[in-house]
Amino acid sequence: MKILNRYTILYLLLCMPFVSFAQKKKPATKKTVVIETPVDPRLERMTQNTQRVVFIDSMLVIRDEMLNKFSLTPQAGTVKWQQNGFSYQNEIGTRKIYAKNNRLYTSQLIGGQFVDEEELSGFYQPGVIDSLDCPFLMNDGMTLYFSAKGSESIGGYDIFVTRYNSETHSFLKPENIGMPFNSTGDDLLFVIDEGNNIGYFATTRRQPDGYVCIYRFIPTETRQTYNDRSTEELERLSVIHRIADTWGDGNERREALQRLNNVLPSPVSITSAPTPFVVNDRNVYHDAKEFRSAENADRYRQWLSMQDQLTQLKQSLSEMRNSYSGASVERKELLDRQIRENEKMEEQLRQDIQQLEKAIRYSENQLINQ
Image (cartoon, rainbow, N blue to C red):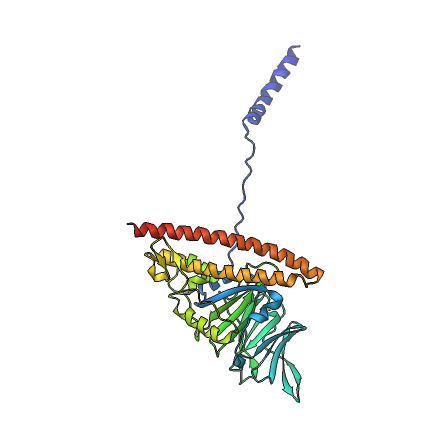
């Protein structure tokens, strides 16, 4: 009995440290692993080198109908849609460049027919620059813009430029034209009407399915970047967050709108200067210079831009509703979804405009009453 007790006591003594350790041991704390999204150095570099450009306006259109909004003078040539993709034809109609099987070809008009089809060589690279489409040749006959996908693109389709080398009889290595023209969406059909000094391009960024936004801008002879903007401002400019941010004093934009008035069948509304803003019963402003702070002047320009967007959105909704009755069943399903999405966008835009108006009035009246 004593032996049993001795071993029992020894057993208990041996177990005590383990029991004590088990009681003091805390449950393992689950560590939260933070996964940081790596910054694409190429995207960051493109943002820092965003091109300085004045955007005139923008319009939301059905993607299949976007060519109707490219109002070009005759000397710019013509852009058309054909079975395999887009095609460009020069002013006199003797040469065309077109997309076929993800590549670009050219042919000459001989005897009333386009013959001598030849692939444009020097820049198609599978996986790097492929799915070529949307060609546009400048009046110099040397500078070619087109859209393509691949590892040289930052999104879906990006816009590229290449130039013809008359010595080697081939095109140079294409270059991505960068931001703000390119984005993580599909950026398409970059066109410059030199006779009118107006540029166009279409993009799917921030747009509902089946739609593109067409931007009109003022081309520049040399590429200039922003050297006086903060990182936050550059990020906004690189994605075209607000076209009013590019207007400056508005003079260039007003001149461009006047040029468009001379080309388009219907007048273009010039909303930058004459659009009144009611501050109070005694003060109605007609120009950004009338505001008593630079911040309110910038807000006013943003308000003008949002008013333009609302007008264009209402026009797009009207066009969709008019085409609904004669559309096929499949087309009606698409239009129905797009109309609902655009109605939500319209309602949200109206609310944003009202909130901005209140903020401007409150701030401006504070300054007036000081």
